[in-house]
Image (cartoon, rainbow, N blue to C red; front, side, top):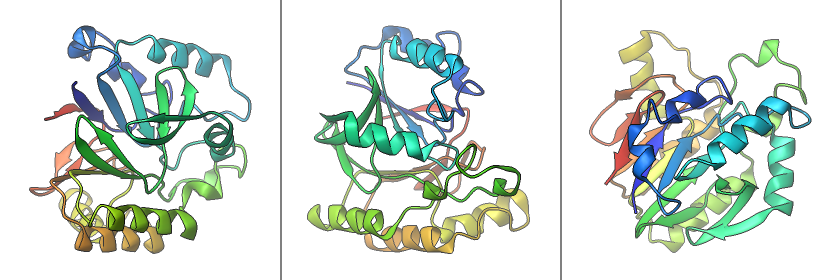
Length: 238
């Protein structure tokens, strides 16, 4: 079993990084191998499923690997919530929402066991562009996790003695955002959603983990020894 991870796919916009041309390893994988997308999956976005979404979901489901994604901020949470409620499945030792065959939504705050490794995942982030989006059409308040999801996340970690192998989130802990702002943007651009980023800081301070993978920033950078930003790059988790 092999595990790969990448950043945002944004529906059809950045999905081609998973093509055979750009991801050559994909041709030698099987459905027992996994590709994790760190948020802004974007193929559950239109109010009603579009022809483009149907095409690309079929295209992705026919890849040799199985796709797992956390939600970002640019998702249709009304549709995702329905999928999570009505299309439940159980893989990687926990509950997921099945979008189509071999494409699964990982739920906020849950721990999934993949190849014996523990992954704590937590989707969501603040849309800095929401001022030019329409609520219920291109932006949803559910992009920001609620208290129940935060509690699930802490309970999951407590049940595993606050130790996992990997963490996958869309946005980053506030302490990492502060580094990103200064190191890569030289200004404060990321988010005023301190409730979420401070929550992730609490997780960071209280959890033992090997690596933390982050989408959202549209950067491929290693912030420090443990924290990795992903966008176009695909890396294998060994």
